[in-house]
Amino acid sequence: MHKVADIEVQHNIMEANKKLANKNKEIFEKNDIFTIDIVGAIGSGKTSLIEKIIDETDYKIGVIAGDIISKFDAGRIENHGVPVVGLNTGKECHLDAHLVEHAIGDLPLSDINLLIIENVGNLICPVDFELGSHIRIVVVSATEGDDTIEKHPMIFENSDLVIINKVDLADAVGADADKMVNDAKKLNPDVNVIKTSLKTDEGFQTVLNSINKFKNNL
Amino acid sequence: MHELAMAQGIINSVIETANENNATEVTEIVIEIGKLVLINPEQLSFMLDVLCENTIVENAKFDIIEIPAEIECPECKFKGNANTDDLDHYAPIIECPKCKNKRVSILNGKDCIVRNIIIEQPN
Image (cartoon, rainbow over all chains, first blue to last red):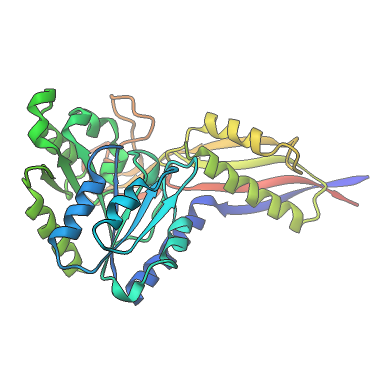
């Protein structure tokens, strides 16, 4: 014989990640580390942006490089002489706070004042998973098509800085970079939108200024 | 794709609660999914079926309730559900449906909650 019981669970699955993210943030702040989560599609220029920030600023940078199965990005960043932890998600399409917590343990935190977390190439899944970063930057390239932003509203609504990259190639692929700027502004009126070409340097200084401003306003 | 991660979180939570309550079987699981969570309920349901094989949850019925995106507008004081736009996005647009203000507070719809489970216990 058995009896039936209705058990209240009220377990918020999103909350578990959020709690870990807050814990990560506490660790960053205790160590005076400003942390950026960089998201964007495959090939949008996330790793190139990180390489340029390492080469052209005086920050003491550490990097967590997320990838599905490879360590290619971590290897690229290692060549620039900064501490980097490669994180493989296996089949998962995003980093989560738990994975980042593990990576933090492998970084020399006292030698870092700017931590850059490169998320997995994806414009959808990372939205739901806070990592504990202070700001989120989304990189989208003109070559992805100028309808990319309106097709993926959530990530642009939930980011602090939008970088429209590869604007030097916009004409070649028939994309209107200004339309992309407007689309981002329409979705998120407070967001900072910068057109860049990491190849020609266009807009890069503005990106650095914006990062500095976020860091100083903390 | 992250339906798998979410489904695993749900199953873990259910099994933990079931064990705490000496369940011999879980027969029903009620889950609330906010419309602003980028989860497709059908894909989630598929993943749940796969993950619960050979567990105490194996024969459970999953009841997935979609929770609308509730917002509050500081401008026109509208309080209610956000609309999906004419581009047919799955997720509602975070915007006041009355005055089109984008700077709104989100009151509900960003969570994924295991609300309750029905279990069988030994007498």
